[in-house]
Length: 448
Image (cartoon, rainbow, N blue to C red; front, side):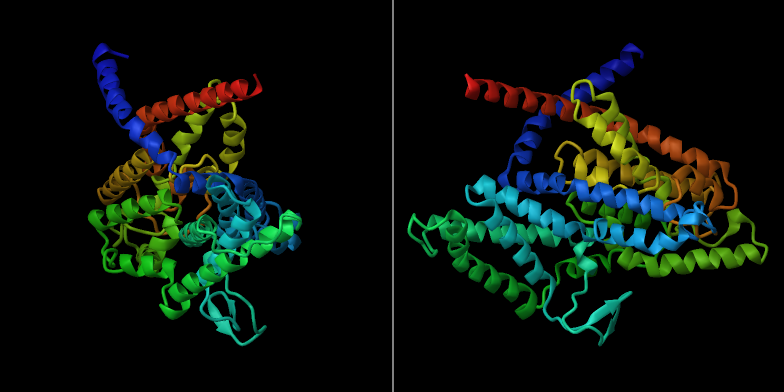
C-alpha cells in the first residue's frame, strides 16, 4: 500500500476514533444494552430456523430451482417450513422475552417478572380484537380466538422494543415507589414476586390496551403508512436509492426493512418484472426492457456490500475476539442465500453504534451504483422472477437471461463494502477487545 493511501486510511481511522467514545457510550445505555442482549439471547432459535429454511429451499419445487434439488425430501417440505415459521417467523416473541429478562436484570428486579411483563405488553400492543383466523392474509370465521401472527416476526421487532420499554419501566417505577402488593418475608420468593407484579401488570395492561385498542395504533402499519407517500411508484435512481437507505435504516433499528418498505413497493415491482417478461417474450432486447427496478435488483447490492464484509471481518478478527469465529461460521451458510437474520440479530448489527453508519452508507451507495449500471446496460435488466434466496452472483447472471455484468457487480459491491466498513470495524474490534479486558480484570478483582 502506498504512503498516500496509508495516510488517507490513517486520517479516516482518526476520524472514526473521534466518534468511537460516543458510540461506545450509546451502546451502554441500559435500554440499548437490553435490546442488544435480548437479540443475542434469541439467536439460537433464529439459527435453527435458518438451517431449516435452507433445507426447505433445497427440497421444495421453486425453492432454489424449478424442481427440488433434494426430491426425496419433498414429502416433508411443509414440515420443515413449519420449524422456520415457528422460529424466524416468530422472532419478535423470542426477542421481547429475552429483552424483558435482560432489562429487568439491569433495573434490578426479577428476570421472570420482566420477561412475562414484556411479553404481556407485546401481546396487548399487537391486538385490538381476537376471533378470526387469518390464512395468507385473508380473514376467515374459523377457529374463534385464533391470533394472526403477521407481526410476530421481523416486522414486529419494533413493537417488541416498545413493549419491553413500557413494561420494564412501569414495573421499575412501581417497585421504586412501593406501588405493589408486599407479602411477608416468610412467603416463598416465587409467590411473592408473582403478587408483587399484579399492580405493575395492571398498569401495563391499561397503557398498552389504550395504545392499541382505544387509540387504534398499530405500530408496524403506522411505519408503513409513513413510507407510502415517500416510496411512490417511480422507477428512477433517486426513489430506488431512497428505498435502499430507508430499508437499511430500519434494519439497524431492529425492523425488517425489506418487509416494511416492500409493503409499499412490492405491488408495482411485481407488475414491472411481469411487464419486462412480456416485453422480452415479444422480442424486446434486454437493454430496452421498460423497467430497471425489479424485485430482486437489491439482492445484487444490499447484503453483499454489508453482511458479507462483516462476515469476512468477523473471521479476520477471530484471533483477538475468539467468540466471533464460531458465530461467523454459523452465520455464513444462511448469508449465501440472503438469509441475514442470524448476523443482523446475532452479532448483532442491529443497534450496533459502530456499524450503523457503514451499513446504511453501503446500502445506499451500492444500491445507486447498481441501479445506474443497470440503466446504462452494464447489468442486464431482470425479466426472470427467480427465488429470492438464489445466491446473489447466480441471481445477477440468470435473472437478466445471462448477464456477465450482473455477476461482476456483486463482487464490485462486496469490495466497496469492505472499504467502507474497514475503519468502523477496526473501531468496533478495539472497543470489544477493551470490553473483554475490562470484564476479565473485574473477574480477577472479584476473585482476589
